[in-house]
Amino acid sequence: MKPMTEQNLKDAFCGESKAHMKYLAFADKAEKEGKPNLAKLFTAIAYAESVHAINHLKALDGLQESLANLDVAWGGEDFEIESMYPAYKVVAELEEEKKAIKSFNWALEAEKDHRDFYAQAKEAVKAGNDANVSNVYVCEVCGHTHVGDSAPEKCPICGVGSDKYRKF
Ligand SMILES: [Fe+2]
Ligand SMILES: [Fe+2]
Image 1 (cartoon, rainbow, N blue to C red):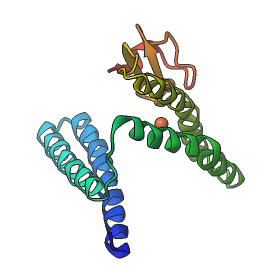
Image 2 (cartoon, rainbow, N blue to C red):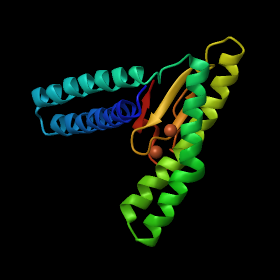
Image 3 (tube, rainbow, N blue to C red):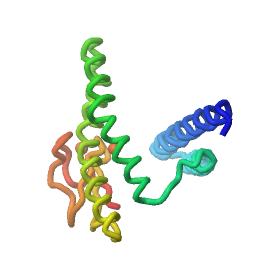
């Protein structure tokens, strides 16, 4: 692919991905304000932006078989754990940005589990099997991710109770 179009696809993928996430957050807010139709509009357009983002990813040949996708996923988590969040935390601490420190810290801790889950899934897929997961529980406050039969009684990262976990 010619380099300018490749860069443009990457930029468009980032932009559409960001719009998707922002609209979901806006939908949540609209729901809490008692505006379900506005929430629906934000949710639907968030989905449309995800369709655009995935189309751009496909055009970049960024969608492969699961074994290769797991490598990409593991690599992303590893980068966040080993380089990105530790560096971001240092800067946030230097600048005394309390909200950023907390947000980076929660993400950093949760990514460690994500990396482990992807490593385990990769072994299973390499052996020709599906990933060995029953239920997955995610803390809606900090993103702590737990695989098992039930949610943790208390989130080990942010301390909320099991009722704050979303089941997948
Ligand atoms: Fe992650
Ligand atoms: Fe949590």
